[in-house]
Image (cartoon, rainbow, N blue to C red; front, side, top):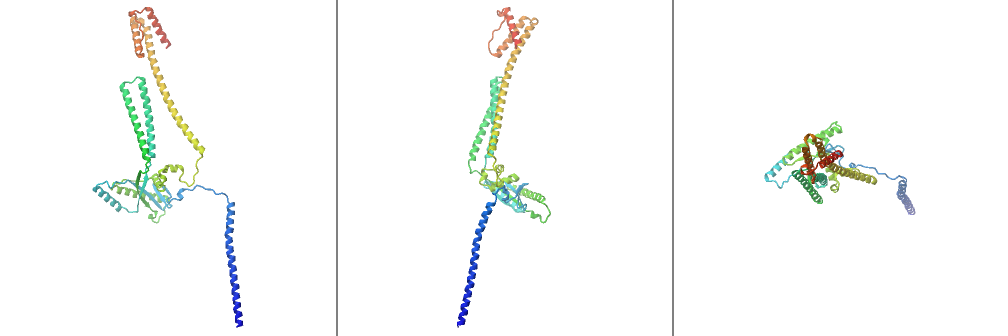
Length: 412
């Protein structure tokens, strides 16, 4: 019994030593694992301190899009694994049609569905109508009308002031001026109405599209390169699109194949529904929104460009104004010269009569000179004393008047 008890005690002691050894091993392992993250954290902090500051480069937005590019009126996706062409359709008002027209539309749509041999997708896009481009077009047209109106006003004033035009000509010019004035006022009313409509954000427009896909896998095994596959895809998609357009025309629906620019606009509105009302695709491309990171131009360069545009615009306006003033001054100078020319003609005529007085006779010559003087008085519109020998004039007065007219002629 004593031997059995001693053996049992020895076994228990051995087991206790084994358990203590296992516990010590587990303790040291757990301690090492807790120290490792601290050391790695310290090494990471040291590595960050040693690294240079990060630099960011430009990355294309197309790296994050579901499509690769838009070319040849097609959308290429998945690195050429799929090509898409879109047909825009113009909707019809089905509710306002008669029963006969509704039946014709339904039969045409059934025929359209029966002729399909490939999958399609019908896509509807709701857009807010942006009238900014229309307003800009109206303003440019109104500026042209305003310039034409100003020219007609100046021309009409010159015609009235010159006194050389008949009443019929003045009435015709006034009629044209009235037409231009009415056109200008009508254009301003259109701009005002369109601007008020643009303030209403509830003016919506729905566009309907038929999306036609094509997979190069349909060609089977082939040795075509990417360019040849793209050409085959375009031919097949264009044939399918034209077939859809023809079958939809039976329903009274007109369609057209979207070009590359229209496809870009469609995708831009689909991905930017909130900002598409404010920034169009043209402004987005000009602003560099096709890149994830962009750098703004220098502020001083912007100010310099604005000053250059302002200087050029003001210089152009000043040049136009001075040209108009120069033309009016030239017109006045021409009119003055015409009046002086008539005076010179009268004086020259009197001088010729005096020189040929011996041939034509003294009385005839004096009568002719009086006729010339009468024409001069009528033209100038002021009375003038005439000298006639039959009404008490003396020979000395006649000689004095003849000498004065000769001196005036030579002076002129």
